[in-house]
Length: 243
Image 1 (cartoon, rainbow, N blue to C red):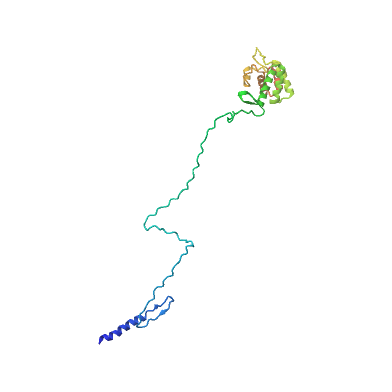
Image 2: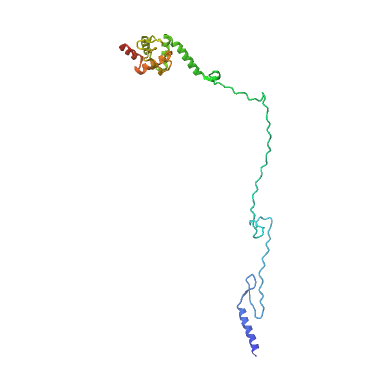
């Protein structure tokens, strides 16, 4: 008698547990009530829609490695473009003939110069100076010419007045008569300016024995440094008999 009584009790217990459960009947959040004595069927999960990829649209995803998992990847070495080799043209030696022989270089003397053979070209100004020195040397060996040479040297170096040059003429007339070979046997004074000792004229040039221009240049320099002007040198000579 106890078995029929237990069956409704078990049913009531199960039914009370089922009534507390509220299930989602569909994806639209619709609740379904469960009646007693009915079996509950839960809906299956919705099947996601299939994704169709259009091959014409570029993808931003990086390319996947198709190599098997775990297999080592070999780095790709960039290839260097090869430069085509230009074929070399064989050189041919041209025989030397009179037509292709390089003419020898000729020395072109600058304008205003004088060609002196193998010695090279000399400037015309230098040639003119040499010519003037030779002319003065020949002229200074004569007493009148020596006076003229003294005036020319004064005009370029000292610029004394005509009065001063007149004093110079009187002074050296008394000393040597403007003779470059004059020599005082008693004192040893030599040349146009009567230098004493004569070796002092070597400060101008070593040819003081035979060159009257060297003697004149030394005499003018001596007067400039010792007395200042020829008239002062003449005044001293008038007073002491020498200068």
